Length: 302
Image 1 (cartoon, one colour):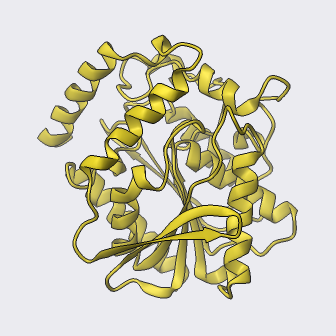
Image 2 (tube, helix red, strand yellow):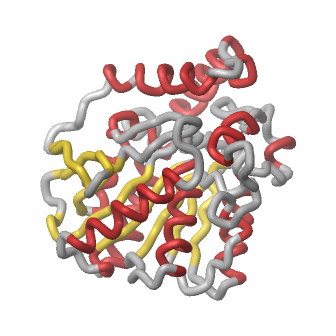
C-alpha cells in the first residue's frame, strides 16, 4: 500500500494539473514547462554533506555532485528528464544528491541541449561526448555508471546503443527511471493510464515532435530505443510506477533487453507516479527506490 505522503502528493499534483494541463500550453508550451520545472529549483537546497561543483565535460556544461563518503574514482553520469524540452542538473539535484550518497559515487549531471532549439541528435551527441570525456579524464569504463529519468532514461538507453555501435567501452551498469522509450506513443498505457497519471497525462505528442523534428522518424532506434538492438549492453535496472502513461515503455524496453540476451531488472512500483524518485524528502517510497539503485550500482561497480 502506498504511503499517506504519496497519496497527498498525488492529489496535490492532480489538482495543479487540472488547472495547468500540458495540452493547453500552446505552440510555445515548452517555455511554460521549463519555467514550471525550474521555479522549484529556488525552493530546494542541497542536503548537508553534499557538495556541488560546476564543470564542463568538454563542450557540455554540467555539475559534479559529491556526497561525503562517495568515492572519487567512481562516477555516475546522470541524464535528467523533462521531455527533451526542459529540466537541468539544477532541477534534479535532490535526486542526484541522494544517488551520490546511496551509490557512494560522484555524480556528473550534464546540461545537454534541449529541443526544439536543438532537436535530435543534439542531446544524444552531448551524452556521448560527456561519457567519452570521462574516459579521457582517466576513468575506466568499469568505474562509470549511467542513469537517467523519463526522457533521460530513454536517452540513457540510446547512449548505450550508440556507444556500443561506435566501439566504445561500455559503462559497468545503467539504470532508467520511467524511461520514455517510445516517442511514437504506441504503448497501451499512453491511453489506458492517462487518467491515472498526474504528471504527464496523455499529451506527449508535442514534446515528441519537438525532439524528433519535422523530418525525423519517431521510431528511429536512437530516438525510441524499444526499436533498438539491445545486445551486448551492461546490466540494467528499470523502475516504473503503475500510475503513469510510460508504464508500457518501461515494460517493453525491459523485454527488448531480454530479447538481446541482456541482464535487466525490472521493478514496478504499485501506485507510484512518474519519476516518484525525485521526491526523496517527501516520499518513503522514493527513498527506498533510491536505496535500491544505490545497492545495484555498488554491486555492479564492485
